[in-house]
Length: 479
Image (cartoon, rainbow, N blue to C red):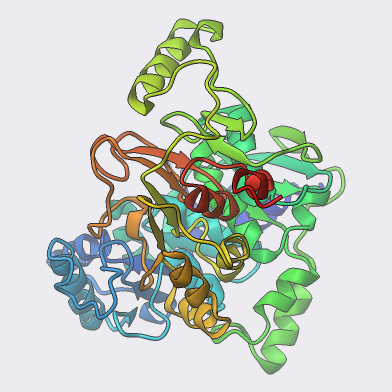
């Protein structure tokens, strides 16, 4: 067992890690207890099959949940077979969950949705807890102060059988975000700016704690967006230390503690903070005061510019490999150095995914769309992150705002994030998307994806061209 630095100041990451450490293995990896985990149908069936062959049960079905999200159709009236390629996954997930006594948030369930959206909104994820999901964007729930890890299928099988994960202790990183965000600048813009600053491997091997005045001012949903993109800079996990806003957000949710248990939990959660004088392996400070809405120009989430900027010139790259990557990205995206992205015609706009499909995301987009129409020729979609988000949005009349403007309004699911449910663009199309990855062919073969915030996506759908949401009225001749 690793020796404790008794009396020494600790980071919050160290506190959570140490509190969940069960043992240290001979290979240097540590066994970390996982409090709860949420499965999805794309990977869980393989893990279920492995356990069945080994004749091993799921150790804690009461702490394990299943969500149907990646391959489910988002069309109204959907069934298992609406997306034929997803049907085997959905059915295998249902059967594996039933066989192991696991609660499944299935099609038709009022709480079905994307695992990273469902888990927080039901109170499954709590401050200081550990969380495992067979999905790289597991750290989304770090917005509530949890330590969450994306795991592969083999790791998932290990967690299901033992309730622990074997990992080498990650390094720690502090990203302090200071200043007040300007109107229409969101956590999505901040996260894209960070990735631009440090690159797609800038946090590799680290657990990132986000702090600073700009972070503290973010509502819970924006903190989740910030942590969602942590993996796109290589981070092993990312979180925001919980505060009173966190506790108020969690209170009363179905799986959160109640009564005396709540009081005990709250007393513990209030201790969850990094000690003064604690040391991080790496620190970064970013002043967000002058930040403008961001947009990706290339084929990874680190190829980013401010919406008023121009596409960079590869000739100015620091080295040959970076220059080659930029030239390749420009070729794939059909762009030239020095171009402005604003004004570039688009074919599709997608608002959804675990990054930006919570109620405040849809409200921000609806505020831009209200009373306007999607530009002719543009296919515009809104897909809520969960069935609960969909109901709440409909109760607030947001679905009508989008439909009246010409958007389609879907059932909840991952949809066009990776296109696993058949929602994809056509070759050569340019798409503005609120998702988290713009890799080549991510949203369909030869599709060109630009990542943005919900407000920028909404403005682009209305303009029919990539738009600066701050200037939309001028673009439409309304001012």
